[in-house]
Length: 339
Image (tube, rainbow, N blue to C red; front, side, top):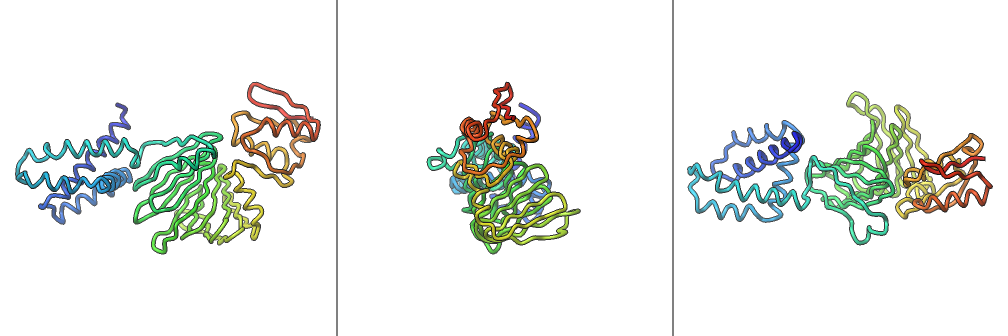
């Protein structure tokens, strides 16, 4: 067992121990203070405890545990051994069936064709990591009733509880359909930007330090953070797109067609409107292992437009050859396009 897995197992066992102790009639305010201190030591402690508590409640195991305790004397030193085994077993089962995992990276394979049949795991309390591979696309429902749609090569972390709804985008792109809550805002962290929303449909894309926020419906606030504080904010609504990079934010207002184009990946398509070939190639390279390599400046600056299937790079290259008579070379690391 690795050191990381051993530490995770130790955290799970401590969480189970605290959960069991809290059900005892001798539980005091001092015990609660000690539990709070343990929870506040790290997010891993909170995630483990919340996950086990939530899953245990779902399985209705606490009621069964209370029945067991009627047959035991609270002072009996063997009480822990008696309860520990079923509780540990329940915790293991909950982990195995996927009720969140703080250290687990969940790769969600499958393209658009699989979404109707399989929407992915429902995320519970605690922080969970999810990732899609190149060319993959997955819908993931959240425990609060919201939904996330992960685009190609995306990595995120989530923490959705009754008290908070937070998403961290490490790289890639996500479309959100957020269930409205006047009490608990939905927060998305990307680089030094925080996107705050109560209920809406929007996407966030992170390319290094460049952040793009496109609003399909509703209203969101994009905050720029500096030294842990909000330095400036931008409000964007239906049809608006915010482009943020380091200390600059540009908002293109009332561009519903551009928003629709940016969200065409949800249907497996890419839409270009007078884009340069180097820009188009960069987009295709996000979705395909076969990479497009632009061989010279003249070719890179060719302007193109149209709608293309994101996963069919071969058809795109063939169309370029037909339209412009470009030189196409099959290379070991991709396809080179030049004059």
